Image (tube, rainbow, N blue to C red; front, side, top):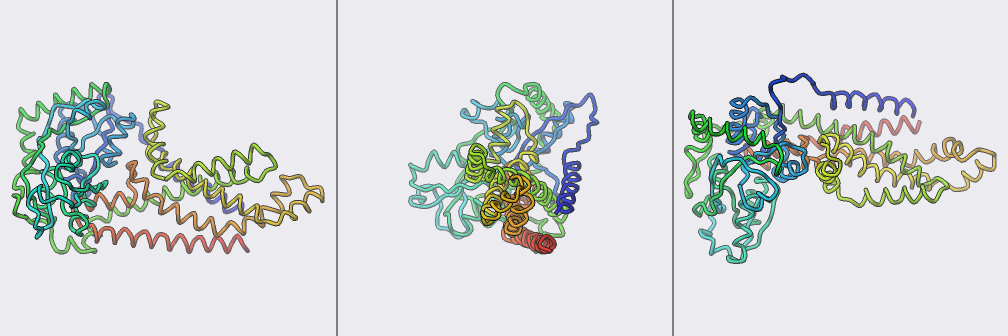
Length: 485
């Protein structure tokens, strides 16, 4: 057992060294700003076939940064997470096709507009719906937090439809394609781009509720960055670079009744093998991040859980009450709520940023550790009470009796639960995509945003998870046999 713990400690040390060591050398004349975005929102932001983040937003941002002499660190966290990160001071700004609205102006300072677009309604090809008036009693899919969602909510009572909300565009489109929803509302540029690249939907309304899009920072903060963005944008418009970037991603867009298939997508690219070959580096990166989170998370959760579990069996009412309370709180909180609270809520309280990986690790430690504490406590309590009484009657103090008599028996009872918790932790890492960690699930979302092959990509991700879980299960069984021997 001591050798096993020492081995885990060494592995953890190596992971922590690799995760938290950051290069400290930076050009004195160039400041780096952290910018959050949603890379599942083409043509504004998405990952190309080389898995590099491109699009109207990022091409403009990089050109402005070069013009104004600053650097940017792009974090693909998703739209909702980006809004919360900037509000909490976790990021310096966000650019994600964000519409400038009066409501958002209460929380953010916006740059000069760099794009204008309206909201369109799209339906499945072959649908009989051709206007808003035909939506009565129907379901409409929207992406949460977007201008399309705001527009749908503003007219739903007038036209009598029900709104179904998703966190990403792929979920919106698939709900319509699968027949669960009858239509969807989306930014015109985004919808035309998706149709151009093979999405089997068609636009049936003219753009409405036209809004302007801008770069955003937290209200009253990062005004220097905002000023540089505006000045750089003006320069790009003056020298013609702005027009080149816009035309690069919008010219040749599909009309409302015509679907233009992508000329670059080949049959091979759309096969499972083609997707794997084209995105192998992204999948490998996602797997590594998932395993890092799992190993570090389960190690910290085990230490935390054992400590809290032992508190629950010591002969002290306060310690037992503290153990019960910790287990009750962190086992009761949904993992996604805990992750968002630690990543976006805590920085508002302490006035300091919390790195995404650290936030994810703490989330797993507290949540998984609470479950670990529960079965550690249960495993010890399942040992016959007469064992402790006999040990104490022989003169052994409580600590030595627990260590020499009770724990060896309790550990054998706990081992299967430890193995199950290891697998559960691996699966729970997928939820941490909400705070921008590029684990396997978030990697899948980014790939789907570009190729729109949701079924094939999610099938690949599912198989990868099953393979990893199988390997971990076999490894855990081997460790279990070694411990029991």
